[in-house]
Length: 378
Picture 1 (cartoon, rainbow, N blue to C red):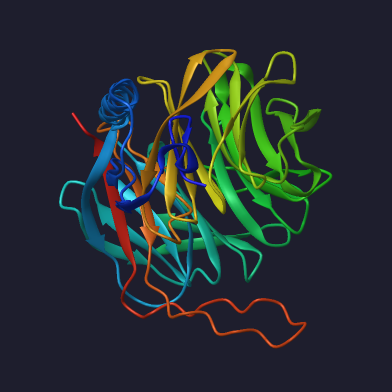
Picture 2 (cartoon, rainbow, N blue to C red; picture 1 turned 30 degrees about the vertical axis):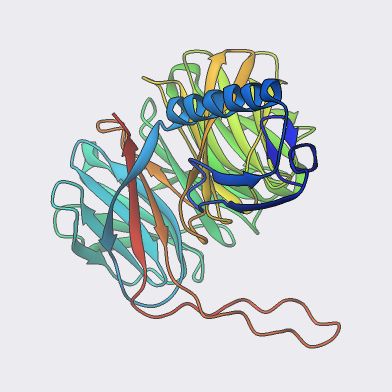
């Protein structure tokens, strides 16, 4: 049943009516053909006026442009080196490098089988990729984009994060239930940390000597002491389930986790308690936090990115549901321009599965992959 800010459709319709709902979600045009009392018309008119005003107020982000990527195969994590104005996008067996000033692909990093993500560390002139199909991390020269060496990791390396205080990179091994820690300058492994479950995205808080990582199959956040290389806390995310994306507000000691049960949780890293939740879309994977605006982003594969705001350290509110594109489930935030970047592609219709079989994934149409760019509306 469609609702207009608390008015159910059945409450409005007396006789016949026609209605049109645009797909952008920003406005609703409708024409109703029936008789109603004048006072009711005024009430509804006022409600619609309020709806229009609210829609304008909520239009915080808008579509800016597309950056063609092309090629074949899937993608996963994308990261931004804001100072260098570069974006790194994992794409099948390579990492695509995008110039954020030119809005164009300017290079590729090859020989990264099953790559999940890439981490640039400009102060040492090196970058690191997590190669899921070979259980290794590539060490890459950021100037030439050539692979210098490779580091052995645990099983299925996935997300990466950099601890600037200790100069160490963390690679989280999803099936290995562990983190591989290595010196970013020497590429030597310094520790392997058991996590007790399958890690997803992570965030580093160098000032607090902590790295926080979502543990998907345990529905919890694990806190790692970066000085001691050991787990110091397991924090349940209930009512959130199966967390994926993570974002950190270090100033207010808050970790935001995007969960598969259509929920974002806000966790206090001092108490280890969930202090707030908010609804998000389905198929979520990515997350980001903009410190200057206090906006939190959740990119959802259903084709929306939820924009939330940390109103207070105890209150998290949805301020916009931004239409994107189906499959746009991961994202990166440019802290300089406040723009967000989401990879997406076109797919063939999914074939009908055989009786009793699992659903069949749709096939990606070659050369349709692109980066969708959204930015502040004003």
